[in-house]
Length: 349
Image 1 (cartoon, rainbow, N blue to C red):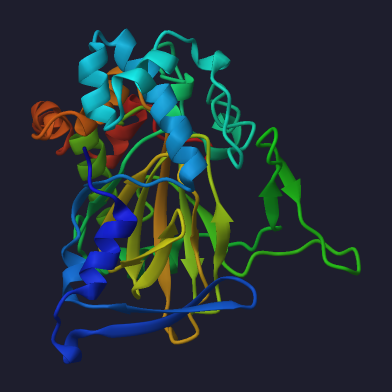
Image 2 (image 1 turned 30 degrees about the horizontal axis):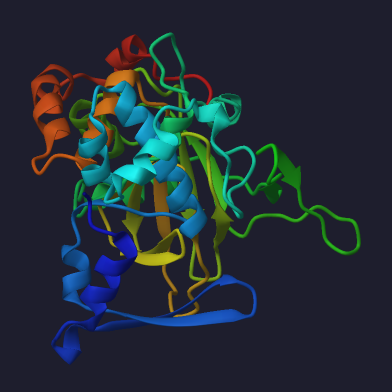
């Protein structure tokens, strides 16, 4: 079973460290609630897959859904109990049900557990007949790849070439997942403190290479019709905690900034890649940061094979998905930006 992200971050912070290597940051995800977190070198060695849940209720609901999914994959009751670290009696209660019959514990939003896909229009994530959209697809472990795409040219090219704009601020309806506009007390529309832009092949040759590497290693070519860019000029710029109904691959370039994942602060550095499912995430204010940072965000829906391989990480000691994508690597890594149209890349972002 994948280690817990919050526990791994706490253990890293609690270890013996050279005081000169410790970074201490103040951060605020919600107005008026300041946190202070220390990060040492062991934090930046966190690499791999980690379990992450927004609450005890989310973890419980995930276990119920996984029991059903694993039964459909041919696992025995004993096997499922071992994978979930639950009793066979617990498995018996849920594994023969259908997903729609599973009650959601308190705190699990109504739209979680329904079929994925309502956000395809907003995110630009591509769907086809092989897309996995059932309730089990909501859950994916967080994967951290430190220094996946380190190239100083990426930050410079994106900052100079992207068409940046400020956008209205919105939130989500907890029952349906639909976006809801946010307003000030005087009735004017709230605007985001960060800026956003669409990405298209050729805008940044260095970023093109990083995206091709991502697509090659993870087999998501053709599964997105756009990539978004977020710009944070300093620590005052932030993105409120939220979740998507698709999977996300997020690159961080420029100044180091905290990415909260289910309330756990992960300090991302230049070139880091984080891949996650529907976990609640955000970029908090960091008043000690005075320099800029951009993120390159790829939204995608997994196909059935990708979902199966990701779920195997909770049962297998090895890393099956890396073996699968290695076969694809040489095929796609060398393709040019002009060839991306063949992957279904381009158009809406």
